[in-house]
Amino acid sequence: MGKIIFLKAGLYTTIQDKGRFGFVDKGIPLSGAMDEEAFHLANLLVRKDPGAACLEIYMGNVKLYFTENCQIVCTGANAKIIVDGDLFSTNEIINVSAGARVNMPPFSKGQWLYLAINGDFQCEKVLGSQSFYQKITQLSKFSDNGILPYTNAPQTIPFDFSKIKPRVFSDLMFVPTYPGPSFSALSKEHQFTLRHSTFTLSPIQNRMGIHLNEKLKHELPELISSPVYPGTVQLTHAGKMIVLMKDAQVTGGYHRILQLSVRGISRLAQLRPNAKFKFQLIEETNTPT
Image 1 (cartoon, rainbow, N blue to C red):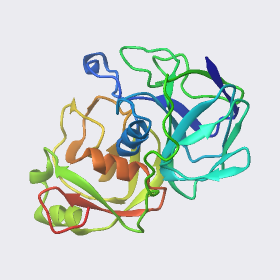
Image 2: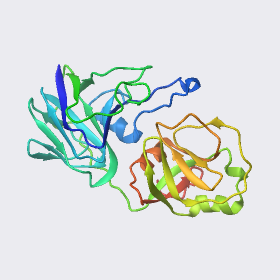
Image 3: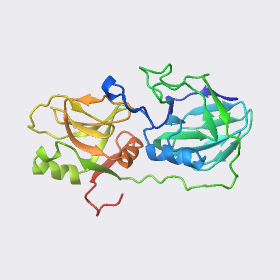
Image 4: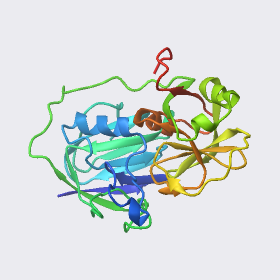
């Protein structure tokens, strides 16, 4: 069995898998990967189940030490992966030798990177998931000098197997979304705004939710609490818009005006504060995705 030693753990590095299902009645959120598309790709490139556990790394500035030979792949944010001085990119199989140091400087674009291994990460499974969540798992994130054991798969992946070009991040992202339960209650003017205006991410964002800078003043009546999900766009009484993410609460008392698709959540998660984007309602087919 090998070990990853976190020489530098970065701002927020965790284990995430497909998430924790079936515990909403106990107030336990889904958790799981912020960028589900990149997460699935990482696992597919190492020939694993798409929902298998990966390292989720926020913004880079991470240094790892591997005690045994293994194969890894990184997806998601645009990043340089430096293995003992050799430079690699995302979306390619990387052979890591025993005693190697893997350095990931701050990412050039995007926020979340997924490191999958040709094998398995050995950490506790709580309520059917290895996803870190501070209220139910022993760790909420890795710290400097932390240790993560791993086992290797019995077969190695050919060196020339499956390399995909790194993701291209556009200056203006389109975020696919469905109308939420309260969308039809909005004025026609507000509906037009949601369909056609450009929105800006505020610096207030984490795994629970992302706040938008723009406000949508309204006179909708107050609501009792109702179920919410990752990707739900809440409209507060003051007109603030909050997009719930993977560690969000499971109920809320605000109007649910939009519901992001899986692709929409993945795209929004990779945008940094002050980035611009537009909502793309699913029934609109004339806007690029």
